[in-house]
Length: 113
Length: 111
Image (cartoon, rainbow over all chains, first blue to last red; front, side):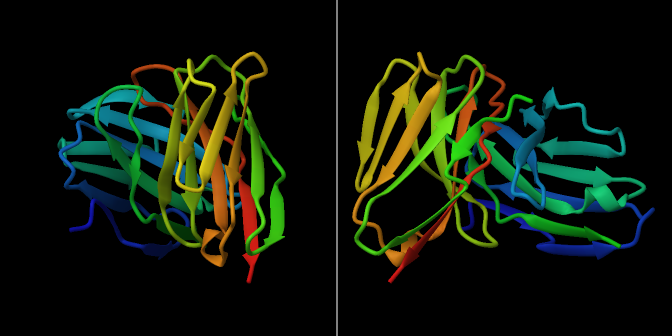
C-alpha cells in the first residue's frame, strides 16, 4: 500500500551513460514532481506535471527529460550523465492546488563515477 | 537564490527538552509547510500554515508565521529520540505547486 514509490533506490553508473528513474503514485493525485537533493541537503524542484502536462521546468539541463505516460506515473530519464548529477532524486505527488501538502517517495540515490 | 534560510543548521538537545527551529524566506507566499526527513528517507509533511494564519498546533508541534518579517518557527515540545531528523520549511506561492525549501535544520535528540 505504498503511496509514492520510486525505482531503483540506488543507481551507480559511469559518466556518459543514460539512465531512468521511475515513479508511481497510488493516491489518485493529479500532480507529480521531481526534486533534486544535493550533498548539502539542498532540495530544489526540477519538474512538475499536472495530468500528464508539464507545468514547471526549472532551468534543468535538457539532458533531463521527464515523461508522464499517465497521471499515476512520472519517470525521469537522464542522458549523458555527469559527475554533478550525483544526488538523491525525490518524486512527489499532490492534489492540484497551492494549499496541498506533497507526498514524497523514498528517493533514488544516483552516484555517477 | 529563492532558497530560504533556516537556523540553527544543527541543534542537539536532550530528550524531554523543547526544540525551536527558525525559517526565513524571501518571496510572497500562499502557505508555508514544514517537513521532516529521517536519515536516508523521503520527506514527511508535518504541518501547513496559511499566509493569513499566525499560529498553528498539531500534537507536540507549534508553528508560528510572521509574514511582515517573512519568518516562521517550528517548536517541538517534550522532544523524543525518535524526533531526530532534518526539518525543512518550504513555501509555496502559486498553483503550480512549486515548493521552495529552506536549507534545513538537523535535530539530534539524545536519550
